[in-house]
Length: 412
Image (cartoon, rainbow, N blue to C red; front, side, top):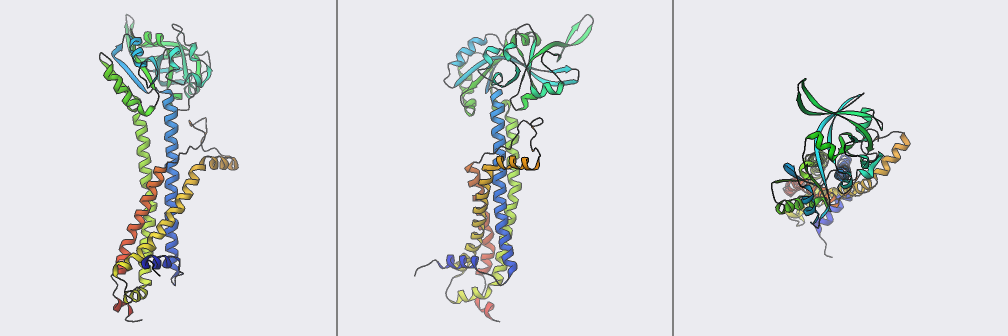
């Protein structure tokens, strides 16, 4: 009968009951630690993927995918818009003027991003109109000085529809009476909610009102929406090469890139920290194998006298340690995938049973725990776990291969 002797013996050692129960405990602890580490990594990375997906879907549904700005302003924006619309990957174009200011009301003041829009074009590049809670962006009429705000911003200021607010710009005007900041009163005619940061820092006014407020003859530029957000960069570069004149072209990765880079860096740091659990489990494999080698010295000596080579003895303990790592990784991967797929319903069930809210919708932008399981993450985690398990077996296996039969059997 032809069998792989090191594989057969290594698997037998893994299943066999040991005289020293402490070794069995360490082996079981190693397997448990490996499973917990793999499971925790898969679940945490899936949750972070879910947050990243939610941020991109919410923020990029409001923020245009690209911007084409004049230097310092765009005089004939309609000609630029007509040319941009001819690109097959462009879905919509709208003019805009953007600036910053301070909104003042009875409860206090808030710094905001002020955006002048053309309501009839804005729905081509943003979902704000479809996310209106009160009023409509179509109520923004030129010369009426009306404003639409995010829900959290209106809530922080204690505003209701019809209230008048004062917008102060970081600019001054010189009059015979002295130097004064630029101030204008606006009436709130709409409140939107997109479930992102824009809910607490974005105020929309009509494009013509923005011209008067920021002293523009034309517009600052045009906003561009493309079919695929991940193609925004190449599309904007193609448009920059085609358009005449001195224009500044940007895409969402430049305007919002720092936010998504921070999430990516946070994901890497958490992965490294949780990876320490797997490393500790690998060290436990080293400990259990070293104790196993000491416990099986006489067995190793007998196997050597029966003709097994040092390489085969080494393979026996590599198989044994790798089996513990493989089983722990497999169990952890299965549990982690199941938990990552159902973490939302599980958290919702616990909230109902314990009568607590993990994410209060009045405070956070989301009311559930998002999760997105990526097979690339599972494959990477399992590969690293198996590799560490294999590395952990090398030193104890080498020690076992160095045992001399005569020395081991001298007192047997």
